[in-house]
Length: 289
Image (cartoon, rainbow, N blue to C red; front, top):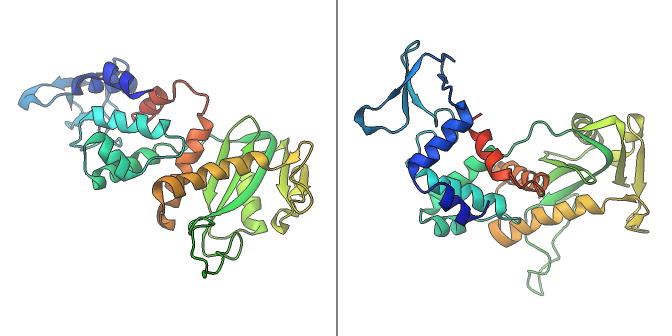
């Protein structure tokens, strides 16, 4: 959803609250603490959207237990931040988000990380032609060094953050940071997210994939000879890795290993919703579900 539409649909705080209440309760509010529907709207102290539970006697609102809990930032700005982040194919930095929303960089950073937490998809299970690959993120981009510098190391053997990924052609992608890349970690990752009985796995010739044929049909491409042999290639997932790295070099410039998972989750979410016209509304519904 574009920013103009966000402004038009949610011009006030109350419009935002009404939308979230409909998405969360659909006219039948329940207590998030005990699940009781014996609740009543609370209007005292001009606290918009407060509810009382007559069973457990807790007071709450539609934001309780969500990423918006306790926020002092107007919900309209939260909705705008969600729209900006979802629409930014190569991500957006907290500095840019702070300028767009008129908030501090620290606040923008916290909002961005909270939004990324909601982008985790636990239902990804790949089948069909599945490409698997690994990449390493961090460091400086190639070419950005002085003439007397040593060329930066690439790939395995560097101190960069390893990331393992798998992608179904025409479908979804899943990727996660990993402490190391070995046959054991690769197999555990792929068996978790790939339907071995209804898939064909395509990888490069890295030795870590050598025993994948024990549970799924497995084909390899030798990149020293060719980048594709008909349907045997890993070009699709390598295209996804390029989006991940462009987000780092073009927007964030650097992020620590401790936060790498959140940015990888963001990249996966955007790729998986690339053709979803209702991504914004579905995301909002997910925040209060």
